[in-house]
Every structure is written in C-alpha cells, then in structure tokens.
Amino acid sequence: MDGNLLGHTYSPTGEYHLDEITFILLRGREVAKGDLVYVIHPKTGAPVVYQVRRVYPHRRVRGYEEALLREGRIIRDFEDSSIHAEAYQWGWIDEEGSLRPLRHPLPPNTPVFKADRGIVARFTRPEGDWKILLGVDPSTELEVELGVYPLIRQSCLICGAVGTGKTTTAITMICRAASLNPPVRFLIVDKDGEYASLIDRLGPENVLRVPWSRFFQPSEVDWEDYLTEFGWQKTWWNAKILMKALRRLYAEGRMVTKESLREAVRAVDPERLGFNKRLDEFENYRQQVINAVNTSRLIPEGDLDPLDPVRLLMNWRVVIMDLSEGVDTWEQKHIVIAQVLRRIFREALENRRFGCVVVLEEAMYYAPQRGLFEVGSKESRAKLLSIVKEIATNGGRNGVGLWIVTQRLATVEKTVVTQCANNIICHSLEDLDKQRLGEIVGDEFIQLLGDLPPGEAIVKGTALKCRFPIWVKVIPELYPASAETTPMSRFMSMELASLEAHT
Ligand SMILES: Nc1ncnc2c1ncn2[C@@H]1O[C@H](COP(=O)(O)OP(=O)(O)OP(=O)(O)O)[C@@H](O)[C@H]1O
Ligand SMILES: [Mg+2]
Image 1 (cartoon, protein in one colour):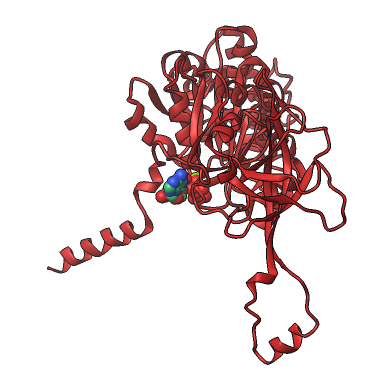
Image 2 (tube, rainbow, N blue to C red):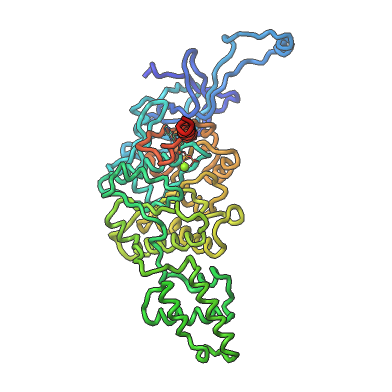
C-alpha cells in the first residue's frame, strides 16, 4: 500500500474538511486531474475515494523574483516548490456494496493513496449481466460499463461538439445493447443515414432500414393538417368541400389516397353543403380542391400499406427510420415521426410485453428549443415535440427509453435535455454549451471536462455504479457510415477520375 502513497493532506488555514481535501505530493509522485485517490476510513478502514479536480505547483513568493524575471533570470529552484492537489469526496463502499459519504473527521496530514484497479473497479462496474461496455478509464485502463436498465428507465444524453465522436459512441452502445441477452430493441430516427453500418455488423436479420415515408398512416392525419398544408382557412368553401369528402371516406372506412379522395370530392353535393350561389362557382372551388389533392405531399398516391413500427420492432432488434430522402419535407417528416412515436408509446402503455429505446440523432430537429432552431412548420414541430416530451418524461417507466444525440445543447428543448441528463456521455463541448450543461449537472462535471480528444468523454449518471463523473476513452465497436468517406478520400476519388479522363 505504501507504494501507492501519494502524499498527505494539508490546509493553509489549519482547517481540515471532509468533502474537499488538498494534499501535497511527495517528491517524485504524480497525479493528474480526474484521477482517483483515497484515504483510509478512520473507523472502518475502508478506502474513502476522492477524485482529483485540480493539480498545481506552489512556490513561496519571493520579493525579488519579479525583479529577477525582468532581467530574464529564472530561479530554477525546484526544492522550494511543491505540488498541491485538490480532490473532492466520492465516498466509501460498505459491505452491501452501497456508496456512503465519510462523516468522521480526518486527522490533519492524513496519508493519501493512489486508487489501484481493485478500488476503481468497485466504482466503474455495475452489478448484474445486463450491461454494456463503454470504454476504459485512461488512468487505470479499467473497463467502464453501463447498466442497461437505467439507460432505458432514465434515458441518456450523448453530447459533444462537431466531430468529437458522438455518433460513434451512440452506434457502439446500440450495437452492444442489441447483442445482449435479452437484446434491447431500438427505433433509430436517422437523419443522414449514419446508422446503416449496423446492418453490416448485426446482419439484415436483426436490423431493418425503412424510408420514413413508409410509416406514414394517412388515416391518422388530422384533417386540419391538410388545411395547414394547403394554407386554407376552415371557413373557406374549398376547405368545406375537402372536409366533406374526408368525412365521407371516414364514414365508409376507406383509406385516404389521392384516388379515393378525388372520387369523394367529385361526389360532394353543393346543395347539401349549403352552397347557394352559382354552380359554376362551386365547380371552380371543386377544381381547386382536386388540384390541391393532386399536388399534396401528405396524401399518398395509391393504396400502399403503411408499416407498423410496433410490428417491425417485434421482428427486428433495430429498426432504422431513414430520413435521408426528401430534402425539403420537414413538415411531413415531423408528422410521420410523431405518428410513429405515438404508436410506439401507446403500445408500450397497453402492452407490458413491449418496449424499445428511441434514438434521436441531432435532437434539435425533433425537439427544438423555441425560437432557436426551426424546420418544418409551427404546427408540425409542436405535434412532434409534445410526444417527444411525453416519452422523455413518462417513457422510461413504461419501457420506452429515449437516447438523444446532440451537438448544441442550447437548441434542444429544455425539459427533454433535463430528463435525459440522468445519464450523460459528454465529449468535448463549446463554451456556450458547457455553461448550459453546468446549469443542469453542476460545475464539478464541467471542470473535469476541459478539452478532450475525439472519442474521449466524461460520463455521469445512474447507469454507472457510482454517481460521480468518470473519464472514459470510448472503445468503438463500429463507426458511423459517414466515417467511411473522409474529406480526403472524396478529393482523392475526384483526382483519380480527372486523371483518367485526361489520359
Ligand atoms: N471512440 C473513438 N475512438 C477513436 N476514434 C474515434 C472515436 N470516436 C470517434 N472517432 C473518430 O472521430 C471521427 C468523428 O466521429 P463521429 O462521426 O462519431 O463524431 P460526431 O461527433 O458524431 O461528428 P458530427 O458532429 O459530424 O456528427 C470518426 O471518423 C472517428 O475516426
Ligand atoms: Mg455525428
């Protein structure tokens, strides 16, 4: 144990507190920010673990130092300086495996030891088998694992600036969780087709990718959504004709398609609608409705059978809802995603044999903070946001977890971020987002964050064995589809092609 002795606690004021300690390193010993150290519990003898938050050299201030430096003369007097380290308390683990805070006073100049693998392991490995590997703690190379139950029950937030490894982390977690026994089921809302590499990895028998429009349930569209699409007021005659036609299809239990709706529009009787002006005027309105139906993007062409996400999730472990086709159709995409999420949530409420994790990559497209990021229309955004919020708040306890991947925390709706922040995997962040996250999880976390290289993250949450932030180097299981074409490889292909063209 003495080999692990790092130094002794010290206080410039003479007061020694428990929650925070400062210790002075023995000559030649090393410690880094984020490392775990421990003191011996004065009563039980168990290791009480602290995490190092700050390390800095301290030298007695000399009056003439400033004058010497002005002349460019540096005092290389290491003898006179010492390394101070500040650490805050995690606690100790009792016989039952629960974490407890130290409450007995520590004597001044208590010895502080470096926590070895055996001790760190108690804090990084949740119990049970239903857990996934995330990566390793770089200071001890110990594996950091996440319990899957809390990741579903309390959701998860994966954040980080551009290119810091968010999608790699998410896809890695999905791949591992979908390979457990029992496998976790996922519905991934994939904006750019990034998750296609799961198909190669887990096989087409386990992963299904479906274009978003195949989920569209025309019969579930609010009639007012059509009016919104066409920009009509309810009181206009063309709106009244359309409503009448829809009502007729509804009464007959028929699917709404362009064909069936045109037919129903042709059958609308002006007199019964209360239209008592000239008939050619009415025909004019009727033609407007038919034109609108013809160009509508909400009304499907033919009788294609919409897919049921619940049925798909019963048969495939991972269902990818691919949004990459259709550039300009966020309004429609919002409506369809809202339908899919409602269907899933409703099923989970009614059926105790069903559950899944919903993954939203680039969450600001689905749950934007008002006024900061806007695609689709006001109505379509509101419709989707309400179900995302509902899942964020009540999903976990009903078997629907929510994993959110985001680059800009500030652009994602507050409730959703806060709900998912029970488990955070945080890669390097921009200052503005650091501040935002600090408001949610506290400054302790933010101070540890600093600048991390891609693929490394600070993790905190209920899915860890302990509730304190741990530094993790994520071990990728696979990479997102975009990682296969780097900018350089694109230019390489263009150069090769142009060389060929010239020969
Ligand atoms: N855990 C990791 N280990 C090693 N390299 C990684 C790791 N995670 C990511 N990388 C590297 O960083 C690159 C960016 O990763 P990724 O696409 O996951 O980041 P991102 O945060 O999702 O980016 P974007 O902001 O563009 O969505 C990848 O091409 C990969 O090479
Ligand atoms: Mg990404």
